[in-house]
Amino acid sequence: MTAGAVTGSGLEPTGERPGRIDAVPVRHPGRWVAVAVVAVIAALIINLLVTNAAFNWSFVFQAMVQSPVLHGLIWGTILGTVFSMVFGVVLGVVLAVMRLSENPVLRAAAFVYTWFFRAVPRLVLLSIMGTLGILWQHGLGFGVPETFARWFGSSNAALSFATINANDVFVGLIGGVVGLGLTEAAYMAEIARAGILSVDAGQTEAASALGMSRGKTMRRIVLPQAMRVIVPPTGNETIAMVKDTSLMLAVPVSAEMFFQLQAIGSRTFQTFPAEIAAVVWYLVIGTVLMIVQAQLERRFGKGFGAMTGTQQGTIARLLSFRGGMS
Amino acid sequence: MPLVHAVNVHKSFHHNEVLKGIDLDVESGEVVCLLGPSGSGKTTFLRCINQLETIDGGRIWVDGDLAGFVERGDRLHRLPDKAISTQRREIGMVFQRFNLFPHMTALENVMEAPVRVRGRGKREARHRGLQLLERVGLGDHCDHYPAHLSGGQQQRVAIARALAMDPKLMLFDEPTSALDPELVGEVLTVMRELAEQGMTMIVVTHEMGFARGVADRVVFMDGGVVVEQGEPKHVIDNPQHERTRSFLSRIKAEHDEHARAIQEGLQVERG
Ligand SMILES: Nc1ncnc2c1ncn2[C@@H]1O[C@H](COP(=O)(O)OP(=O)(O)O)[C@@H](O)[C@H]1O
Ligand SMILES: [Mg+2]
Image 1 (tube, each protein chain N blue to C red):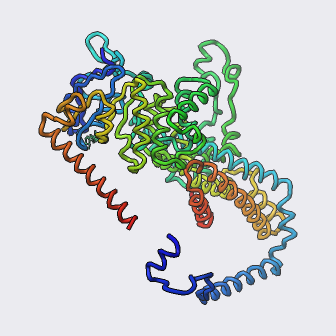
Image 2 (spheres, rainbow over the protein chains, first blue to last red; image 1 turned 90 degrees about the vertical axis):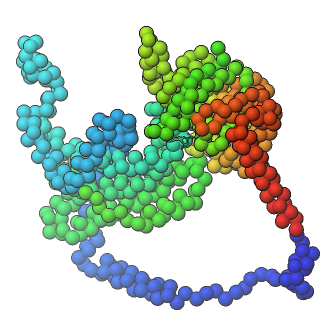
């Protein structure tokens, strides 16, 4: 495999062997045109942002840190997203397992659930959450049922210790979170189902052959592997959820960032900069979430070797926006 | 009673009858090789023994316990999933495609069932797991994920994983069929050692060398029935049935073809 072999092949009969490559690169004139076009557009946008007085940046930044806005950001936007997603993911995984169960009743129930919540728009559902109190006008009793109480000769009020005014439950953050979480579960069920089905059947068989129960197989073997498929779209769902917490104004929920900024905008007649303040907050949260998502994907890709592939996938996904849902 | 006592086992998929009355006894400590053409029902039969498939007819006893059912009065009652899982713990299974858990290291694969199923302590399970990985020659690979192991190494981890449950019986379904030829030997060596240590084994394989050298008995299956069985040298060198003869000559032809291809490959490389 040395000089002798090369000479023997007759390719390089005499003289030096080829050295370092110093070639003229291929020219890409189209690329330069694209650069020029993008540069011009970027310059126009920056000019608009900086010079157009309508932006009123000092007002934007002031509005962003008003205490009702921060309060709304933490409660309605951030915690609203967290609770809705937790609700949606847990219920979604349960629904996915039901969809894949051998029990036809469970399968059908999960199907009907998904069908209903995929068809009803989020904005409509959230409005309904605000008016749902009408179904339980006399309060929602978590205590001992009335008739039951009467048998024991005690007054209703004494035993029904947890009667809550239904309007207080549904009007407000809980109503918003429940409304968003219920629809989210329908989407998450599809995502979790795809994740579970992506795991090779041989994994379940190997676990069964070791004597593992179905539940343990699901928790220890199938779901951790399904995560690789579940995490990326769940990240997208979370980012979409941040945006959709703004729909909670239909309930209405006042402890929410966009609601508060709109209120400031109409009080001060500075509607446009108040809306820009909301855009800046959504950009900040979105950026943080995209970074977290990339980290999570790396973690759940463990043991699958294709690290670079996963990372490329992440970048591709981050670049491809997901439109609003509802 | 033998360790495995299968009587008149029937199994159909829809209207396709795959097992048509299999009888097979395997004594404790015995190594039985199952031979037969593809589609003859070998895999299905192994899966019936550890109840990955439910049989339609006949009975299988493993270590004296009726698999999958309990006899009460004059009726059979199907066992609940939990009881079936308990029966499966006593049977180790090694798959053609390894089926290691890819999100766990080699050692975690081996520790998983003892800890989660048998409820052993982690330290004890780790100690035992290391011993087993050592035994299959992978003591220095315990922190590797399956994706970073060769096929032969993965299959040896899979054997260690099955042994960690201290099974009474080991089932092997073509454990070397998915391997590159140069990796077959290391897996067969581990299996041979296991046989020498007295493990009861049922092995589906096309490796005639292994069957001849290690098996106490070979069983030839075709079309869902046992065609003939006996000592390896009798069945392999002097088959009584035409179907056995044609299968064996086909296997031999494939083997020779393979050897010739390797030989030619070597010559091309040299030239
Ligand atoms: N889960 C299944 N569903 C339907 N048919 C099956 C299934 N498993 C195996 N079979 C059929 O049973 C026959 C025997 O298969 P198998 O036991 O895998 O044979 P072998 O392992 O001897 O090659 C084949 O015809 C196969 O198509
Ligand atoms: Mg097979």
